[in-house]
Image (tube, rainbow, N blue to C red; front, side, top):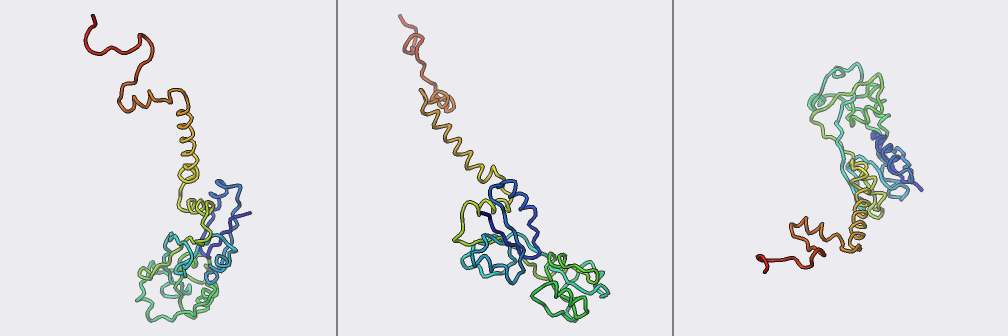
Length: 227
């Protein structure tokens, strides 16, 4: 048995894979990269349990947790006038031809290198498909894309929630560990309650009350000196 994770091209899940392996060695994580057009296919077919996807998506029947944004870049040929620019705005590209966008970003970048025009891509994809004959320049006013973690509403169990906790940075103590610790505290309290006296004197002192003393002369005297 394993937890089946799919991640869209451009996402680097290595740190979460390491964290999961340390936390749950009993449940291996099967991670497979998918291209954006197919990023939900296995999840919909129940052949995957979770997926990192690039928004927007059809989220019907899915839990969606948006995570981080990706900066948009213009990919241009290495000898293009904009190749050495530190940043661009969309207006800079208004008169430039745009390369035909392909389902496979690697093919889009190849068309850019061939001189057909520029392409706008998430920075993660431009980095993934980088070539020596192209350059990637940030476009400051282009809409960013966003990565999200998604899973089916029908597959929402403790294992899924624990992986969500890993991605969100929760520690073992703050997720599964806290629940186990809480149960341990309750068991300890129950055990004290079953003992003779039930720890009532200590509880009373915490509340500021005076515990009743037993033995040593019987009842406690009140009032003034006796006759």
